[in-house]
Image (cartoon, rainbow, N blue to C red; front, side, top):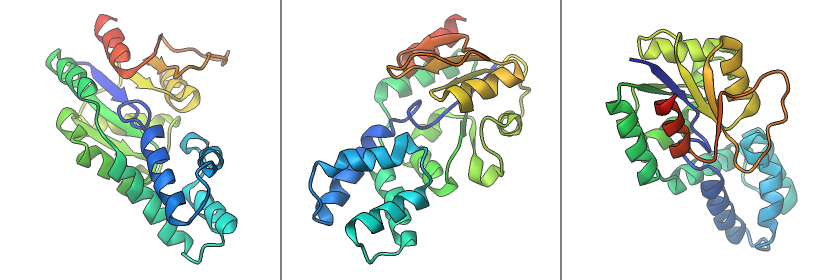
Length: 214
């Protein structure tokens, strides 16, 4: 049974949509103009900006009296509340599992939020296990987090595949371990010259099909 390592945000679960939905709600609540959503998306940088820095930016821009702790909590809970599992992705995961693959999520991020998204959306029903950087104490692309994912499923990394949207964290990490990989391009061009994905796909379903066909 081969191991299939999967990223979470913008791979198995859309993150852009839920963050935008939360942001629009939040801006309405604080009386900010609707067009400020673009500023917030730029600050967020597709999830790469530390949550505490996003909270501080919100406090500074709108003169909020809420603490950064409260804002981070609201951000976490808001994104979780808007997260949904695409039924077609769920179906593709089920088919992949029935074909003998063992799916394990390897995600960077906060344990409480990432695990809440996995459980709330029902994604946990299609996974063998998951590992999240905060609780693991190590982040992608460090090879140790991939090894922890394999250990959680009681499997070896040899022969595993990695699917994800981050050139460095997902594909770079897989490359360092000699794993085959599928990169979700999300409209971007591959520019890294040190390594490259085995396949490039325009979505999760196509990525899973590539793994099954590969």
